[in-house]
Length: 141
Image (cartoon, rainbow, N blue to C red):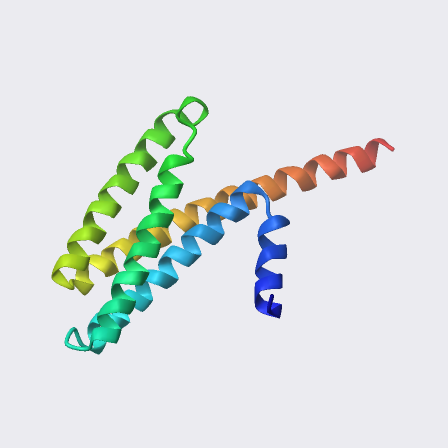
């Protein structure tokens, strides 16, 4: 195991659920950017086409995973909305792969960035709530 692998493993194992979601979004965005660069590099190059397909597949798998882990009971309407967004994203990525369409990939990246920003807000709110609880406990002691 390399140092990078060990670092990533420790980061994943030590992450809370929201951090894991953020990591998944980040990796999907990285993969989509690589796929986009591969298309722009030339669709005549077999290596670039292979890399494009691999990275689009990786991003699609991440989105499927995010979709499959939604808790529709507890998440309610938000989970339903995310399920719809994830379904649309996967359909669009299939189209992007078929037609080598960087515009579609760019739109998907934008959507994922917006979703990631929303989850970052959730994480920030959770951290602020924990800090407030700690302060109230410390004040009571």
